[in-house]
Each structure stands twice: as structure tokens, then as C-alpha cells.
Image 1 (tube, helix red, strand yellow):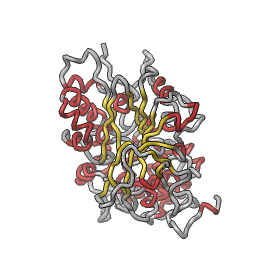
Image 2 (tube, each protein chain N blue to C red):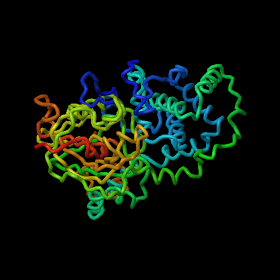
Image 3 (cartoon, rainbow over the protein chains, first blue to last red):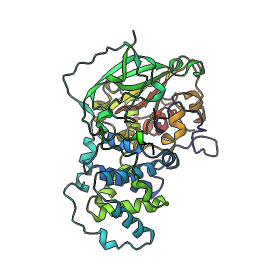
Length: 245
Length: 215
């Protein structure tokens, strides 16, 4: 039912990859980008996204749809770049032949710098002068609707046992497997937000009430919970759960 | 590829079957270069925009922003109240806003409660106040283990919490972005807001560290 990215609670992962100093203290000074290509992969992904041919949920779903062996082998920015490549082709911004051509050019070091300089920009291209404005605005998912939330703070609820995405098999959702079929309590209501389950598939924003739901560690992990008093909070859209009667 | 995965009737974006990315070079540096130069050649991206983006997050947007929010909350009770009630607006008072911080939530550590933030499904993180997430935050290890064994995870960061302290783990499954308001360290009573901000580490605002006075 799930994809590989949905890894909350999974067994088998070792220690958190941390750097410690000579006093065995965790280093907390990692630079923004460890390598130039990380910075480039990140910035190219943002700039291509600004062309407006896909939304955040679509780009997440593309990363999640990478073949499991690639998802596991790739580092973070490799996942971004692979998903971006697939998006660029699927949305017809570039062709597979063009990708093959540029792969060959960079691999053989035959790229003519003139071919990438002083190019007439596409009218949709994100300009440097607009970067701060666009970043400052961001991409809010909150929508004003007249939709009243069904649930109240304090309601006992139970999450769905299966992927809430009924329209698309293996489709995008934000209800993690570890929190499926679990009993929790509505902690807060956060207004109506774009529904990822439809927005990731081009099926509309469908703003839907979003709640924060509190789960006891013992409900999620049973007797293997580290401490029965600990709590886990998830932000869940209204269709992800029902009242626990 | 399993043909049952295909679902063209509902969704023409289903692409479990095509893998343009498999044509990319094995060296990630060349992979980025191929895509970057192709997009530049088509005028779909502008190199000045890439430079502006990278420069912004390397120099202007990072945990130094969140540290100023925390330090202000430590010295100004009214601000702290606004921050806990409507974090997005309170953070905007310091001009931090926008991408990946459109809806902010601040959760407060107390002697009884310790908060820690994770994104099990991807790597959601409050960019305007913390910048780009560090490698460990994006790791499978942190994403998989933090919801199930937060105490063991925190101990790897050097944080050994008393069993009587309740842990609240916030899994960022939607577009709300969480910032932990750590406790002001004992011994910092005479410090100015600027001095306090220097004590506030990135990890302390994720919940995997606590601010300490370095002697």
C-alpha cells in the first residue's frame, strides 16, 4: 500500500549521521550547501518549478514515484534532480532527445559555452529581480472557504486503515502508514488547506479542513513505545479520519 | 514494472513506467550540469536567478533568523505570547516570511515538555527561520526513527531526557512548519537580546539540542 518514502517508524535504520567534535559534542555548523552541485540542483529545481507547470504536491509525488532502488541509492538532491528530470520530460518542457544530447555534451566536455549564454528567455522564466518578491510571498496552501470543519478540538478520532487517495492507485497522500487505523484526539484546527491527494494529480486544489491530531506513543507503537506518556502530532486533512465512536 | 500500477483513466501523471532520469550520467555533478545547461540553452532558467537564490540562502536566510525570534521571545513576554498564538504573524514582525514558512507554528519547551520536529514523508522544514535543512534532518535514519524512538534519537545528539519529561514529536505532514522555542538557559539572565541569539543553535530550534552557555 505504501511507497518507500513513507518511512516513519520503520526498523533497520542505524544511528543518525552526525558529525561530532573532539569533545564528542554534535557539530551544529553544517554549511547551507555542502557541495556546489547540491546548491545547483536545489536552485535549478526551484527555478524550473517557477515556470508554473507543476505544483509542490506534484513534485513531491514525482520524488515518491522514483523506483525504490533509485530512491534508496540517491542522496537527497539526487532525488530532487531525478524527479525534476522526469517532470521536465512529462510536462514537455524538454524532450528525452534533448536530455541525451546534453548528457553527451557534458560527459565529453564538448559543451559550447556560447550555446548557454545570452539566450532569449522564455516569457515564463523566473528573473533574478523577482526572486526576493517570490520567496517572500511563498506558496501558501491555506485557502479561505466557507467550509465549516466537521470535528471539534478534543474529538476522539480514528484514522483510515488504507491510503485515503481513492482516485489514484498508489496515489499521493500525506497520511503516513504508521498512523493508519490509529486512535487520536483532535488537537487543533488549522483552516482549509489545498488537498495534496488531488492536487498532486492535477485534480484540483479542493481546499479541505486541516487538523493537528494528537496520538499517544503507546497507541502508535504498542508495548514497544519508549515512554507511554510521549505524544506524536500529525497534521491531517478531514477525510483522513472519522469519529471514533 | 507492474502493469497494475498504471492508472491512465484517472491520472495521466502516473509515471511509474517512464524513467527519463535513468539517462542521466552516473556522476551527480555532471547530472546537474546536463539539466542546468539544457534549461539555460532553452531560456527556461536564468543563471542570475540561480546565483540570487543560492546567495540568499547562503547569506540571508538561515538559523540566525530563527535565533533572533527565540531571543526576542525570551526577553519580551508580549512577543512570546504573540509568537505562541500566531507564529506566522509574530515571525513576520521580524521580516521573516514566505516560502516554506507560510504557516508557522511555534511549540514551547518547558521543564515538563520537550518538543522535537521531523518530517517522516519528505523533509519539510521552516525555511524562512532555519534555512535549508542539514543532512541529518533529511536522512532516512532521522525520518524513520524519530517518531518511534525519539529518546534514543535525542540521546545520539547528546540529549538525555528525564523519563518524567514528556516528549512531543511533531511530524510535518502538511504545510504547517514547526519551530521549537527552547528554554532560556540558566545563567543567561544578564545577557542582551543579541548575546542570547548567539546561544540559540539550529538544533535547539528543531528540538535535537538545547541552548548552552559555552564557558
